[in-house]
Amino acid sequence: MQFDLLVKGGEIIDPEAGYNGKMDVAVKRSRIAAVDKNIPAKSAFKVIDASDQYVTAGLIDIHAHLFKGMTFWGVDADAIGSQAGVTTWADAGSAGAVTLGGFRDYIIDKSKVKIYAFVNISAIGLVAQDYELTNPEYSNIALLKSVVNQHRDIVVGIKLRAGRSGGAQDLLPLKRGRKAADELELPIMLHLSEAPPDLETALSFVKPGDLLTHCYTGQTMKMIDNKGKILPAAKKAWENGVIMDLGHGCGSLSFDSAEALISQGYWIHIISTDLHTMSIHGANLIDPLKGAGDREIPTNGDARNIHYQVKGDGKPALHLLTVMDKMLCLGMPLKEVVRATTSRPSEVLGLKGEAGTLKPGSRADITGFVIEKGDYELFDIHGKVRHGKEHIRNSFTILNGRPLERIEHPAPPPWIEVGYDG
Image 1 (cartoon, one colour):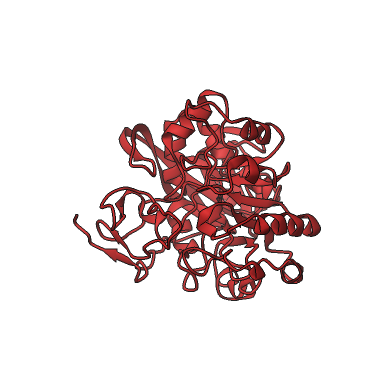
Image 2 (tube, rainbow, N blue to C red; image 1 turned 90 degrees about the vertical axis):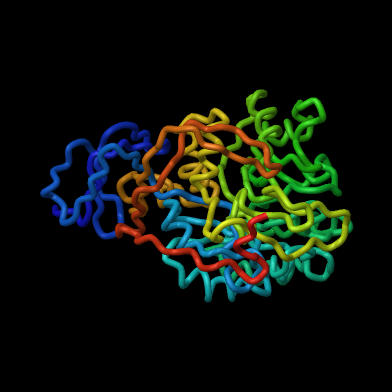
């Protein structure tokens, strides 16, 4: 049999299949056909030389905001995917019941990469920056169920923003989100940020198999006490099978929180970006009211400023590989970093055997990368710095068996001012 494509000589890392070492990956008709040592180059029509590179399944970013052109938050999944090796995405609540059909028609169906959706409990989704939960009528279970049942092939869960940013004044959205998820037999992705509610109350709504995102946050719903010890409610959730998602964003990853939890053995299960119009700029994002920092503007219940400034040329400065660099710096072994960006999110999305692995028969999504050695400044969302010794750089991305050309990300939207020199 003549293969369509052969990726030859790479250092394979596939925690699900157990591949680890120099092997070749052969592709036939958009599927992985074989993984073995020394597959002859002449057996394929096209050969990619992956010598001195790592090769994994296409990366999966389980938390991003991709409703570009319709929401405050949306970024271009194809462009970022082509630059970072991300071939599968899950959007985290950008669309609600009223907007899910449009998200499918204008984003999912037109994208090269594969996109799934956590649907917002609020019918309007994340159209504006905040306050999607202010009107209790938007948390409509009957409407949500009706729409989700028309889009079961793309819906992977229900998204809830616990905390002030969603605008909720009580627990009604949490109660309705829990009820809707149970009746739809879907997991919840629960966002942690600024209380109220307090962490213990928020965690009372999650069950094994649900996801907690922003679990290394340093905000007031953080999982540690003032001495850095994990809180009892967080410990219970971690040990009872709740899935812990990083969700870096520009308001979540705190090195202090991460290091405190890691020192007690609490590693996140999934590495994700919470990529959106602000977080994509990383440390180049400027808070116009404070003048510094890679973070959201603190709020005391009033609307946040919706105009931001960015240093430099406005090109993306943060994506999944950047977040993987930070986890390597914090001590996560490379194999576990790959697991947290391939097989583990694939399992959560119900794609086991289809994505997140190089097993024969799976979708031929393949990522190649090199790890460069040096001294790299890495920032958390509070501007604190750690120095990493490794930097992951994407070398090629294969999507459905075909090389994906690099795509430039569009210019930032009008609420992001580029070129601020501070």
